[in-house]
Amino acid sequence: MFAPDDTCRTSQGSPAFQPPEVANGLESFSGFKLDIWAAGVTLYNITTGLYPFEADNIYKLFECIGKGEFTMPSDVDSNLENLLRGMLKRDSSERLSLQDIRQHNWVRKKHPALGEYVPMPPLQDGDPYRSMSVVPYLEDLHCPESGSLIDEDDTVTDTLCVPDAEEPHDVESPESTQVLKKKKSKKKGSFVSLLPHSCIHGNK
Image (tube, rainbow, N blue to C red):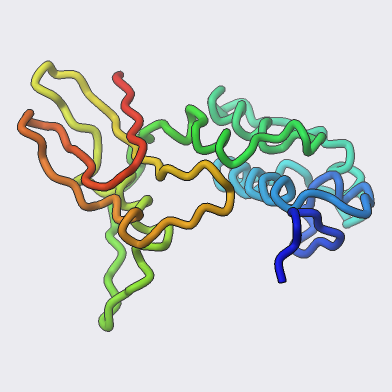
């Protein structure tokens, strides 16, 4: 029923998101590393509005992808560039792992809001699977109530909670994903997570 490892022999999806191992015609490749590459292309597109590899047709596109050479826009900050280049390594064995990405400085950083917060409306019949989705994490990162807090010493502290999961296939229970449940500590202006998450604190 389950494969012994993540070895894949076929690939699906848009050509622009295929990794060099697929573009170069390898018969087998790592599914996890393929996903890291595709996520890197997605992040590149979201943050720059461009694709790292583009061409007039699929043959030229795969030739570009196979070489693994791409340019980075000049306005991309150094942390993001480091992350993208780590995810888009031509050699799949050198690509960042999921744990590497989760602990990367750009991912851990509390990014400033670029627009007004628009809350997601709740479903009328409830949403029992909401806590098992990415939504609570996005709300914890971006909703106004979870922004940077000023402590009594006027130090702005950013807090980003990352679930404790060492293995790629670890599945968290609904209780462990409810990162929005917080309470104020006795110290004014700080919050303490109620649930077992690894909280990363950074002072600016």
